[in-house]
Amino acid sequence: MYVSYSILGDTLKTAQTRIASNDVKADIYSDTKQQVDTLSAKLNDTKTTLNQEIRYSLVLVKIGQLMPAGTKLGDLTLSTASFSGEVVEVKAYAKSTAEAGQLQGNFQGSPLFSQVTLKGTETNQELDGYPVTVSMSVVLNRSGI
Amino acid sequence: MEPKKQFKPQNLRAIIATLLVILLLGGGAAFYWGLGVVREYAVEVSHRLADADASGKQIQELQTLKGQLTQSNTLIEKANQLFATPGSYQSRVLADLKSYADASGLSIANTSFSDPAGSGVYSITISLKQPASYSGLIAFLNNVESNLPKLQVSSIALGQAGAGGADQVKTGDIKIDISVR
View 1 (tube, rainbow over the protein chains, first blue to last red):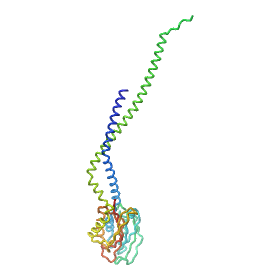
View 2: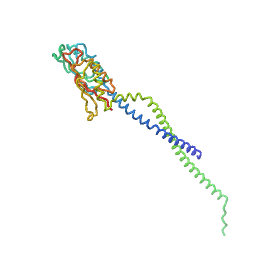
View 3: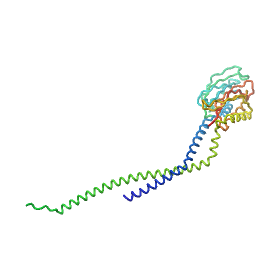
View 4: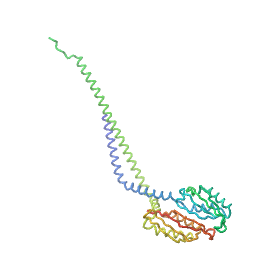
């Protein structure tokens, strides 16, 4: 029992010496830890900024690709809220009701939009050569960009 | 006269036997107590050893991190480039936007910076000379979105230019958030 106690005592002393020596080393690396913390905070800022990124240039390209021949985009207002589930009103002009229907179909089939609802079509001459005015409400999907 | 009591060998044997039992029980109790002490000490030692191993591992991790930090200077520089400083962001953003507008065949009509003191958001609102070309607008936005420091369009309004060409659109205010720190 005495021998066991002595061996355990020696082992304890060795462990305590190692801890003390590591504490000294840890002090030496304290500025490293500070640097890592600073870098981590900066990279978190960067990550947040990049995660919030919405590329409107891509959105406009995709909307342009969805416009069939014989249609023109009218009024459209986009903001950050538009990509968080807010309903967006879209106005477009078409040469005929056929193109207006095709436009609605293209929007409904695109992953960029969901809840595409036709609010109404109007026959007028708001835009020369495009007698049909189409009003729709849509929800934009960030994942569809 | 009563005969004198004699200390008989049986009595001595009984005393020795009792003492032996007491000694055995005492020794057993002492051994049991000692075993408990050694066991507790062993637990303490094992905890200390675990602490020593953990602190050693921490030091190794710190050494690795220091090595990685030295190699990550480029990454740090890139992360820093994403942000402008409060002192210089206005002139820099104006210059960048003007050059992007020129490159896209557009012209900036008006600019106004927000007051970050209230909202904490640094932003600029611009309007373009009308009408603007749709493809030029897309090129302009693409350049803005690729800019360093990071610029994020936060709202844009489009309308039909009417009598303009097929590629012409009417643009409303374009609000652009600026990453500043």
